[in-house]
Length: 237
Image (cartoon, rainbow, N blue to C red; front, side):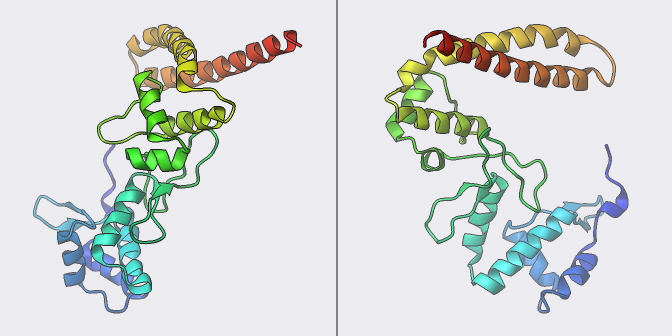
């Protein structure tokens, strides 16, 4: 869907909005920050910059970090990279960024200037955030319980790694969990059998319907699994 024209701001409008908080801001400064890769506004066919509210909030972050924390642009850029990947920037130079506002099911809140933020963790960040050792993570990878995508692990990998780390306290190792992966793959296959015909249907709402059915079946699958485990443990008493 196309974005309405007034959803964009000119560089002069951005300057006006920032000047009340940052008195020394100039157009040259904004252009310099763009040249350093800290912002990346779109361009009109004639070459004029088009800023979104996300660009504006990103600029506010950069300018505040310079003014209030005296951070060099290199560190600010590293912080922005962490935020772009759904992380809380390190509190001190050289520190490790960590997942922001994590919940038990691996969902993460986006930053105030990011929309639809997707968590991306490096190997070291996943280890630090989950409590696993490098050896334990390698074992999970060998059994297919977690998978790196490109250079990063996602929120699902973090949720799995944290659960495995907590189970390790009871002496359960990665090799004991292969049956979990096998069972999950079978459940995924069953869900795919149901939604594949929906995806083949024509119509604008087919994709949305398939996604809704997928979410509902996933939730029911988790409920059934929990009930079966509880029932089995109950019989063992």
